[in-house]
Image 1 (cartoon, helix red, strand yellow):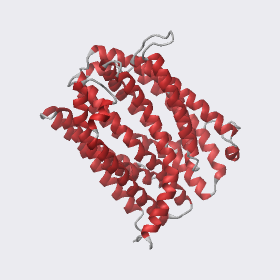
Image 2 (cartoon, one colour):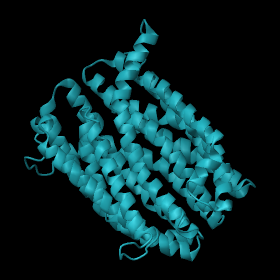
Image 3 (cartoon, one colour):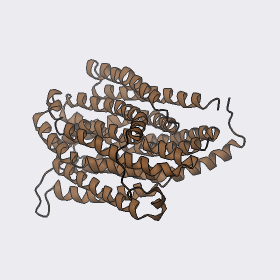
Image 4 (cartoon, one colour):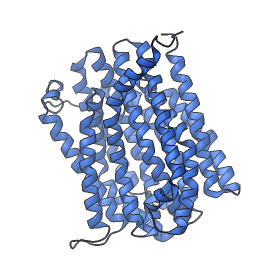
Length: 450
């Protein structure tokens, strides 16, 4: 059995420095990407509560599909990282080009599906006015999905070779564009029509295309990336490489959609409890999603670090790197929980002035404070497993955690039982706790005897 290294505190400190140097730009990129949803939610929340509820409902229709696509593309990260660690850098450019093909092969059906999803909201009993606005919002934002997926492929290539900052920079550029676009299109300034939530959808879609344009120019002109010949040559789609990407990526995508799907179904169930409750849920969920971007960035960095060490054949250090990331995650998410507990009214007030919506959001933020640590532990463990290209068992674990444990508990407490939205959020806690336990046990068992 592998034991902890000697001088453990010093090695933990040094490994933490390496991981954080990789993780901080990715965290910033993830936070910036999520800030686009945050900006949409805040600006629309101050525009109209009905439009805020529409964003909540619309987002939960297209977001699981977007997450699935991103999950499939995440296969690029461990593949590139292991090639980079093993010195087989000539293989990287070919896989990235196939990843770009894959991003568009996925985008076309998802755009078509997203544009026909709004009847599900009527079926769930959500108010007709909210359904109509949500339909316009998701149709507008769907035009940006091909750009978002292509950007993701190029960003994952950069992160796989430990070039972390471009994704951060270009996401922040897109965020700035989204803020300006929202100001113009939500409220109808400078001669543009007043579109509310639909305007936020158009602004986000345009911002995604700007983000892709910036990243494409960067990978073409950057001298450091010239040896990979990313866009200088043309490859036809390769069935072998695409299948390898799908073999690693589909379990990741399904794993993510199982988690996000639980949140989406819960949101739709909460939609039947009333517009104010749905709006308050969207506020609390958006805040929880924002704090989650930090351990998600850490998870992506952990995939890269573990993948490169595995590519070098260094499994002992890969195990220690995974452990270090878990320690960092606990520290970060404990701090996030304390902030939610201490400042719930202030945080909810950033989103809305409606007293009923704010009161509901504060109640749910207390629930979010409980599951923050479990959420961080499960996502970092999954990131470490991806570095090993182990993606099938985490998919099974998420199926058990969220759909066998989490959602049934939430439904029993919140819909059948008397606890409403808080009962449904208790299902979040149960599912994330189960996922954290199963995935951490899996990682340490796989690296125990190496």
